[in-house]
Length: 181
Image (cartoon, rainbow, N blue to C red; front, side):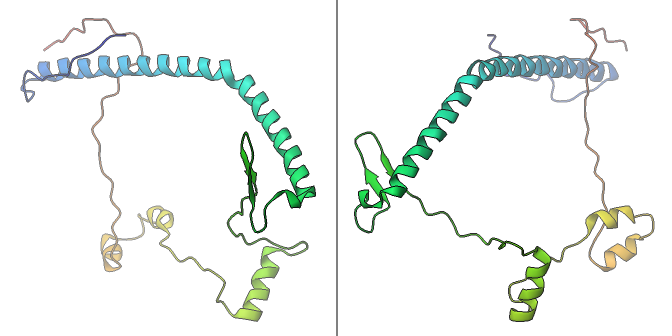
């Protein structure tokens, strides 16, 4: 693996078009080299994933099946656990039950709409959330209709920023890129 030294810029600024072309060529080469390195890394990582994927899947299946067998056994034998305890310290592991976080669940034969209506009737809107937010997509779509003054009067503006980029051409570049002034 190559080690690269930190890049030091000989000149802090570009003074001529030839220097711009030379700098852009260097950036394009570096971007392509970076892309090649990332591709090589991704290929190696995928090979490692592929190597272990089947064994990991088999292990997960085996663990799930054996865990289910143990859960069935201890469910049928609750006397194994000490009073007021949900775990048991064994030779090879601690086993037990974890209490999950509370969730709200629909009962059978209830729809969300029916629950909303029942909540409104019984508790007003105390347990109903209504999200109010700015519809930014609609404002952007209507930017031809809305004036700057219209938007400013409600504290908004539609802005677009520009970001400088250098995008190398993907075809193979020669090692020594010629710079023509």
